Length: 218
Length: 218
Image (tube, rainbow over all chains, first blue to last red):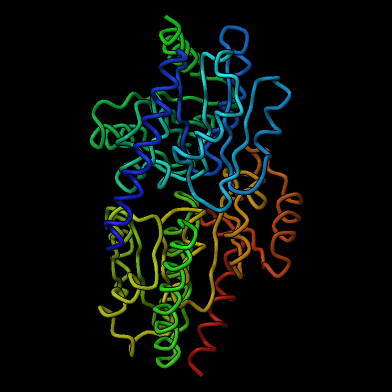
């Protein structure tokens, strides 16, 4: 019965997410759902992205957090339209929360919407919000054994950013094993190794997102 | 309506968890519910603990994982009674899953039961399993801003192990800010800084758990 219940919740979410998707398409907005564990580097990636693409694209941000607006405060000085969603304890964003969020944005002024999900490697993967692509970020200190242990997140993502590669010298992280296991779970997954701290590898990410956001314009 | 539903699920869980708790007390078993993000160091802490206390206490382990038995395999060579629970996608252990797990253990042969929860800083905090204490482990690379952003986990835990302090020289982690914020969320929280890699600080943890497991004997 609990399983059936979960199925109903997911189906109801899918309906609302489809409406979001239709609206985004109509407005020509490319939407990224950015997911990862607490501390993987979601907000820092967002900061680097706003610094690099802020002049080239009209960007909007939705910040999903359980309890604070700390991440929204961090990016406030970029002068980008930002909406904070507090989930009030819930461990993920869903289509309905995002629908509430976009009501507060002027969608005619946005080409690229980045949604930073709640820090969690599990639950956000289950809920589509109407995004074009799910992007996951995972950091080297989390360990190279994560693809097998948390497969859904890897399965639903189009792109994986492996962050904090500046810490590789201090950790036992088997890059080959990680790549192999991630691709076993999702053979189509694109993988980029980056450091949001040093900037290494981020150009690939900027190019990736810029191309896609461009496409939504046309 | 969704909120009411969640309330019912949590209440049903509380009933089963209470039965677990009664059984643990009857058998004189001290139970720790070990929680933290993916990669925080739960399994490594468990390994260090089995190495240090394995001769002194009769330990049992329940391994909660979404999809694999990799953690259970890691600790298999310690020859400790171990039960693997695969949650089948669920983001936390609950009282009912643990009840299923303990049916496979000889409780008369165990003084200390360590339950390693699913890697997740959010959901496991909501579900009691009948434990004596919730212990959370968080690692330095996750960042010093987590107490405010994920308050429930800090609120429900008796002890916080701050792991991977060997990485402090390579990261911007404000220890004082972290402690202050954690204690603001939960003034009773005990905090220990440790490195499961170098062993630094672990003696405090071994003493903490040994004293409590001892108490359950008497």
